[in-house]
Image (cartoon, rainbow, N blue to C red; front, top):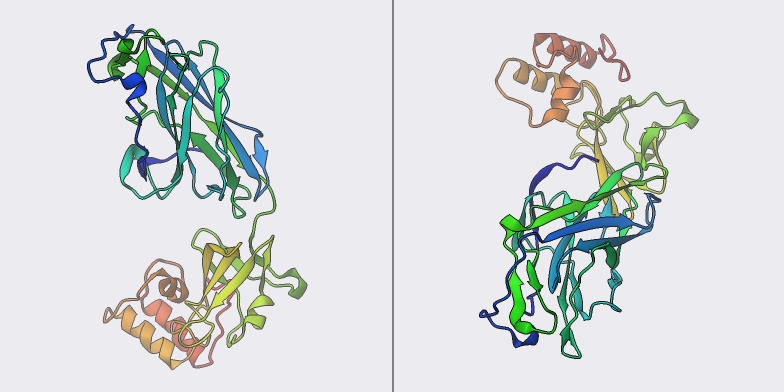
Length: 358
């Protein structure tokens, strides 16, 4: 899945405990100048069903004694969600003593440049080394090892989608802290970003399963048209007044429901149909009755008067739905040609084909 990079706001509010060994800013360790780190994101499977738990594992490879890390793990919010319990687990406790924490809140208090908060969610994971037998439990993993795991969840509405899980290279708060000699607190040092080689490997997975959406009702030999480009549905009967009539034309597939929202005047143009999965609206279509521009599912003098006003420039339609319903030769404008068709239908001289209006 191609990631659109913008600006992502994620909360990074857990404070690093810098007082390891009681070290102060006067520590005199010196960087080697060739420090490198590779962060690899992995998952327990490549494909998931909607609603499945996804176990995310982060592997780390270093050529120095790391004393702390902080990794914001991002993932597509339309594909994954954060469960009540993420089950954060440290995987290298035998080698490195320390404290690992996670923060999955997102209040926009800090930014990772290049990622959009409307497209990505975040779990922030950080670790600080602990002391055991006067030795700092640092991470030196030249061959690469799994360091922590947690769980996220494939959304019920994510069937047919791919999602990427990553640690963004653009992040500026990784904690570039190291120590030369784990038993000597005075050798702690900070690695200059300009001399720090970092590599990040992301993971993309697929969510497979039946897609929840609206389809024509084959039981009634419906010819309703579901336009996924313009997110409109047409092919309904004039005078439609009830949800039961609407469901003779369209039904929902998969584990979802539909919610029908009427206009002020009825179940005509401008009514909407929400596709709902697990209580969440995942998409919304607008109902179109060609020639009906006041939403009552009829074509009468009210509609012809409105179209005349628009065609002569006295007023304009509010929104694309009414334009779609009254542009009856599909030329992108509302003019006398469209008015003639609506007026003829309103007077009972002709009938507008609701499936093939052009």
